[in-house]
Length: 109
Length: 113
Image (cartoon, rainbow over all chains, first blue to last red; front, side, top):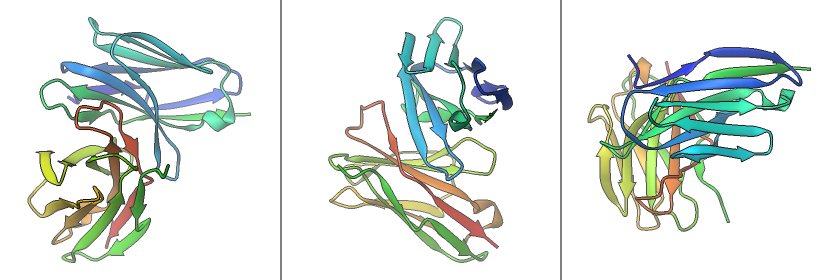
C-alpha cells in the first residue's frame, strides 16, 4: 500500500463545477504539499499545509492531522485548471517528500 | 531572479549507455533534490544534495549518482541505462536544508531504447 493515496485518479468536470481531490497518508508528517503539474512536466507548488486551511483565489486546501487526510477544492472550475494535481507529504522520519500518484483533472468548456 | 533550470529537456539513449542530467538551482538556494517520475506515477525521491554533500538517498541503485558544485548547481549521472530508467527526471531546489518548500525545474524527459 502506498504511503500517500489520492482519489480519484482521474476526474472530468464541466466548466464551473466545484471539484474536490482527496489525499490520505499513513506516515507521520511535518507538512503536506499540493502541487500542480501541466502536460509539459513542470511542477508548481500550490499550497504547503501543516494544519487547518489555506485559500488562494479559487483554490482551497484543508488538512485534518488526526485523520491523516487532506483535500484540495477548486471552485468555479475552468479549462485552464486541467492538469495533474499531486499531493506530497514531508516525512517526519526521513525529512524527505513522499508523493502520491496524482489526480488527472480535465475541465471541459 | 532565475528559477530552476534543467538541461537537456529531452534525451534519447540506448540500453547500457551512460547519461548526465544537469540542474541549475534558483539563485540563493543551496539544497537540490532529484526525483524520477515514471509515466502515470508520482515522483520518487532519488537523492538530495546540501552544500555539495549528499544528504539522503532514496531506494535507487548505486548506478544513480550525483554531484553538487560550489555554485550549488547539480548533476545526476546514470550508468548502465536500463529500459525502466525511461522517465521524467525532476530537480527541485530550496533555500536551506530545513526549508519545507521546494521549487521545481521543468524536468528532463529521458527515453531509453
